Length: 305
Image (cartoon, rainbow, N blue to C red; front, top):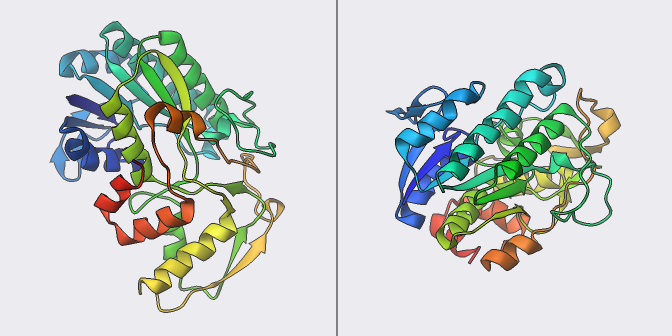
C-alpha cells in the first residue's frame, strides 16, 4: 500500500509517517509545505493553493490519502476567515474529489469545534453541529465538502490533541513547569488525546478498509478539565524525573482567560461508532498520558486492539 500524508510535519502527521510503514507495511509519502520532513526531502504542497492538490495525487497514485493538514490557529482565524476557509474547506474538497475520481480511500480529520460545546453528554457523530467561531465553521465546511465529493472516506473528529512534537498543551505545561503557580482553566471539559493514538486508530481504519462515507470520533476515554490535565502532566513529569518539583495549579474560569475565539465548554466526544465499526478499544486519557511519557510504541499499538 502507498499512503500519501498531507501535513506530515504536524503533530498527527509526524506520528503517521513514523508508524504507518510498520503498521500497514506501507510506503508512506510525506507531504509538507516546505518540502522537508525531519531533514529529508519530500513532496511539497501548499493547502492555501488547493487547485494543485489533485495533480499531486494523480502523480503519486496512492491507494490511500490521509489529510492531517489544517489551519488550526483558532484565535487568528477570527481575523483570517478567508485563509481558514481556503485551507480547511477548499483544500479538503480538492483532495476528496481527486480521491473519489480515482477510487482512493480518504481519511480526513476534523474537530470538536464543529459543536456548540453546551451538551450534557458525549457528542455523537450525528448530533447537530453549531460552531461558535470561524475555525469551527471552516472545519465543518471541510466535512461537508468531503461528504459532497462522494467516494470512500472516513471523517475522524478529534479534540484536545497533544504530543511530544509541535505546539500543544503538554509541551506548554512542561515549558512552564519551573513556575511556582500556574492559572489553568477548570470549566472546560474534554478528553486529552495523544497524536500517537490518532495515528494508531488511522492505521487500524486503513488496514481494515472501508466503503462509502461515514463520520466517527477519535478521542481517548474519560474526561477532565484543562486544570486536571495540567495536574496529571506535572505528576507524570515528576514521576519520570523530567522535573524536580511541580508548580501549583490554580483553578481559573474561562472568563478569567479571555480569547478572541470562544472555546467549547464541553468537548467530550462519543467513540462508540468508531469502536463498533473497527472493533477497537480506546484507552483512558490518563493511561494514554502515562504511555506518552513512557513512549512505548508497542504498548501503544496494542492498547487499541
